[in-house]
Length: 499
Image (cartoon, rainbow, N blue to C red):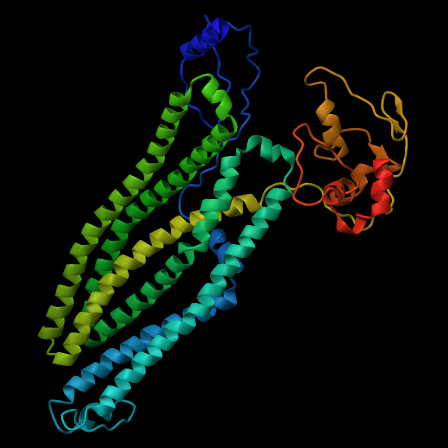
């Protein structure tokens, strides 16, 4: 008990250091102990730092997502958005003509020049006007319902394809990748980033397109009624973009920082669960808890500053929006526009303001969400192991048969041996080399007359069996654990193997 107490005391006397993902070798001072150090050696990191992109999202990221979502489905979606906005514009003009038909009984004055329609005055018979309005609204509702089909299909397709590609890429990565990459970083890609692709990314992309279409239609309508509005529209749009540029750069990087600082939280928690017995034995729960608080604070700080940037932008956009509505309203009234047309101008001026604000807002959200695609795409380009199957060089069905193994001594078939050596002598490396987790830099490994580097990895690993130090049984029967491939799970072969 005394020895354990002394050990715990020595442990707490160590300087508490923040648990980070990196293990960094540092150079010592002149008075530092620990033996001489080679000045020519460069400190190496056991765990690589997580990459963080900078600047705007590249066009390659957009192409990667649209390719996964299907260009055809996305084109249909854009077509539905155009149809929806034009139908809403038609509805606004129809309300204008409907209201003007009350002014005079000669309704054809207002409707003859418009598709050649002739309707009675609304004061005499309002039913035709009401039917056209209801029909237009039903058409808009139908477009919105039908547009959900390509939206949902493209979202599911993009998420499924990107997930499957990333899973295949990670599963085919060499073992070195898992040595230098914390598990929390990988889990963050498969959880949070895929969740973003599943959810908000497609919605933000649709909203950006919708607001761009709304903005174009609004400007065109206002310029039709108030031609001089074109000049202030461009000036106000430029000021919007000037404010938005700083907001987009700051918020995009804050989102990237938030994504990167979330990985250490997942990693440290998973490591704590595995080593909870050791942590409790040394009484260092408080140290781990404080480190977790620091990590959470970093993540929440990025989130907090992101929303502060958002409020900063909202105040300036609201001020510019009020100015836009004032200019459009004054221009329509001073220009002698009719009451119906002036109403349309005011409504479209508000749509112009909303289109600018929400278009830039959703564009920012889109770029931040595409950060997840960017992170997933990084894992799509991981270095891969050699091919799983080489069709031109496949081993026989019965390979490997009973054979001798010649290393430094001959090993007879079915003979049990033990490999003894100090730590780092290569005992585990020998097993890794047999399964080609590490490829030989020189020489050959020949099993039953076949060079294992000349055949595919699936052919090799499906014929060998390894029982690791931490033995694991998969779900299923003993037979399925002995031979994973059901086509080979024959009772005779298994019995012979056990003998």
